[in-house]
Amino acid sequence: MTSHVLVIKLGALGDFVQALGPFAAIRHHHKEAKITLLTTAPFQEIAERCGYFDSVWLDRRPKFLQIFDWICLRKALRKARFERVYDLQTSDRTGFYFALFFPGPFPEWSGIASGCSHPHANSKRVFQHTIARQEEQLKIAGIADVPTASVDWMTADASRFHLCTPYVLFVPGCSPHHPEKRWPEMYYAALAKLLVERGITPVLIGAIAEAEALAKIEAACPQALNLAGATNLFDIAELARGAEGAVGNDTGPMHLIAIAGSPTLVLFSGASEPTLCAPRGQRVTVIRREPLTALTPTDVFETLYPPEASESNAKPGHP
Image (cartoon, rainbow, N blue to C red):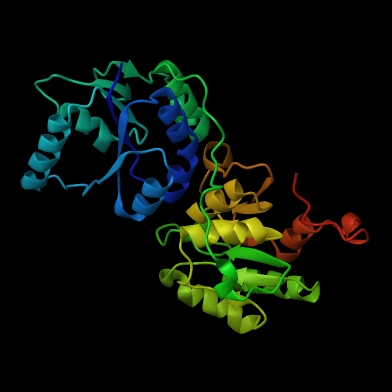
């Protein structure tokens, strides 16, 4: 019976949230084991509160020449005497972590590291959606039942935001390295005005780094509620549960919002492939345009509220 298990998942947010199902499956499969998660600081609180892990280690992600940090990581990994490792990051970096156990003994290892005991050897794995890829990886390692990710335990007190209902969440941010994935702020502003005309409050979600973009939307639509820098991940999950809908770019918070259950509309450019990385949830719709500027605010509004449904006061038109 395996008594000490390591799970590796470093990020990013969307990938981490989509790994909650595999985390639950590993916990169920190893009921009596001590399970440790190796992750990064942004996900520490989620990891500690989700209930799937007995301990959480933070990876400092040492660079090539940070020899002392590599030595410390190797010592910690070997000292823990892990009997099995589930590498859900499956990157070159985490594959190298397998080599840190040299000269042995090596734990059983599920991942793509050369020489590991349970390799995910599907040559087409890079063409699989993240969730399908991890499900197949775990099946090879002997875990056949992977549940749908749940964030029901991610609760928060949203009363401090003094929300006016109904409301729709806007997530206009995205990685600064991929501006082509951003629907323009003024398009979000135009959409916000259309929602206000319908009696719906646009609620703007984003980190401090996105404050300027959210401020532009607020300036153009003062009725919008700007929560730039005011929400953590638990707040976002809570807000999503009460939202009439959510609109956002191809970015991490949209995965969390989709799993929380809000009708979710995700805007994709040609820079990423929805079949590989789109959020999963019961009520998710994807619109893809190249360039993304070809997608008009009216297009998005009518996807949320199809014209034929307007007369019946239907809620957002997601499957």
